[in-house]
Amino acid sequence: MLNGCTLAMAKDMTNQKQVVISDISKWSFGHQACVLVTPGTQVQWEGNFTTHPLAGGESGKPDPMSPISKAMVNASTAAALIPTDAGKAYPYFCSKHTGMQGVIYTK
Ligand SMILES: [Cu+2]
Image 1 (spheres, rainbow, N blue to C red):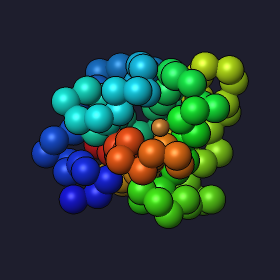
Image 2: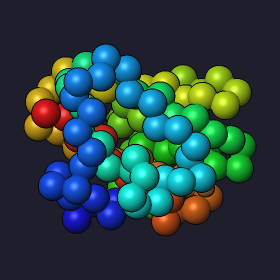
Image 3: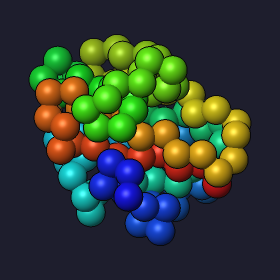
Image 4: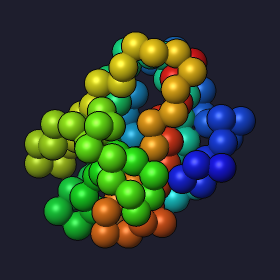
């Protein structure tokens, strides 16, 4: 289990060119925390990044090399380009509330 996710739990969004994870206050499970995307997809989070700063990495351990750490934050959206490698896991979390977490998996 990584950031509360397993690949089996991930919502399959591989049919979408751009994946939007809406309302980060619901990063909790049952929403869109664990998703499976096509490699090279742009993933966009929506929410308040002042109160919920987005960080890439295992929850509580920011990873500066993560593409999610390099997300372009612009007011209420943050966009990250997920690399083209298949079979990877890119965990992310809120640096103020580490229980807000998830994983972007690539197919
Ligand atoms: Cu938060």
